[in-house]
Length: 425
Image (cartoon, rainbow, N blue to C red):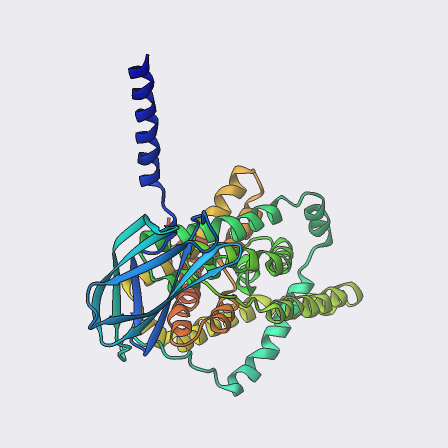
């Protein structure tokens, strides 16, 4: 009996030690990219619970001290324990870090966890790698197209059907599908794709933030040009823009932590509210015109298609003008993700709407609203939250998605028009 008891005791001890070896207390990416500056900081999260106050500490070893030098390691404890490693950069190159988490129990020291071969790259910001600030659009061009945009939104107000509006309020399924796709499925897909393509953290965050943006004006514009439901499109845009005030901070917090990014990410509340008002005010004017002067509303509706098509072309050209510098520095993975994100939004929006047996115009509308993100909100978040050059490096994402989504939608529009004319069979 004593032997059996002793064997069982040894078995439990060995299982406990095996379990300990599989536990991971330190959270760090296995590859870190720095642009050559004087100093850099790495923050490592630790979920190890100290047996005594401040008994754990982090030891950092460098393979090549010619590239990097560890200045100090600071422990910060609040709700979560963070170790901040301050590094001094000497030259461009590659090296490996070894991290050891120790616990000092009285005079004895115990190794809790060791992570080897954390790869660190230091690169120079050459002209090819550096991402310059987006080109500013000429003020005269903006002053010219702004009245056209306001007139276009006003005419969209004339197209709103109150019966459709009332039916959507009674059965808000299209709005719910759009909200779930925009704020839950798309950010998760953006995160998943950025990890598969192994993008740097800043660029991955840029793509995720673009995926979590609400629908932009392009959604109801293409709903009109491709015979969707304009009333549902405008309602979905206004709803998603309002929800963005809550969902964008939540998603930015969740995914920044998953990517290992630290710091406070600034949500442009004023920009979101002004975007909402920029839609609601001219659309409301259009609704008033339709109710009080139906003849004038009918006259305005005749110009909506050519005006919308013209504004779409201007928007694509301006986006390419502002993002041309970024496009030159974008890698193949970035371009591939820029093409996949809007296509995925279209596919998810249409598929879920079709499964719910919604009418075809509504299915199209949900697809357009899910696939056309307001990329410039993501651009504002990135520029406010990151320091240079990381801000411009991450800004590649919203510009790439804006350019790719505009081109994809233009291609769909041309194919759709060609099929209607009997060119394609």
